[in-house]
Image (cartoon, rainbow, N blue to C red; front, side, top):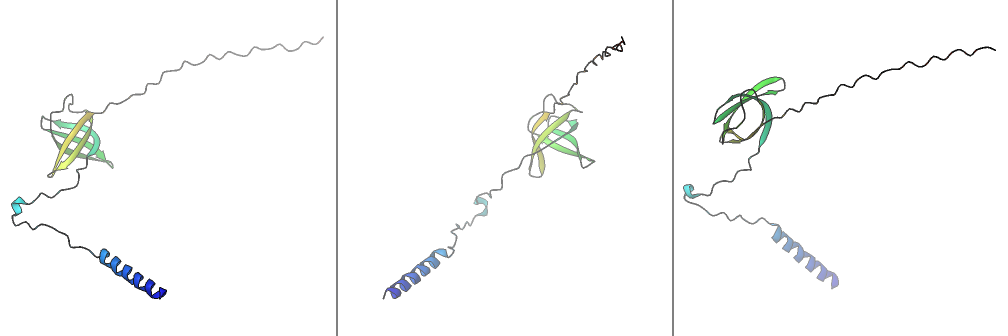
Length: 138
């Protein structure tokens, strides 16, 4: 009798587990007006940055040239606001995102080149060792 009860309980547990394991149909509201449909969320925009030399700059655009695997590549960006204190020939770091097929510069900053100045160390004077006289024979 005890075995029979255990078998019944085991079968009931297995059937209940199967009932919870099945996929439930997703509840998606049917929208008859595509114009009123909610916009599709896209993934977060990724910000890319690189360093290059400014070739052209205006209030609305900037063209930067960079070296990629030994070849020069020029990229043009739209500016949100005019870049101050940047002129043609400056080395800059550009952070940008791609929106609607355009590159939009989020941040344009000049690259500060740190120069390491080595101080010349004066050579040490080498003093000759005193010459000792040969021991005298007495």
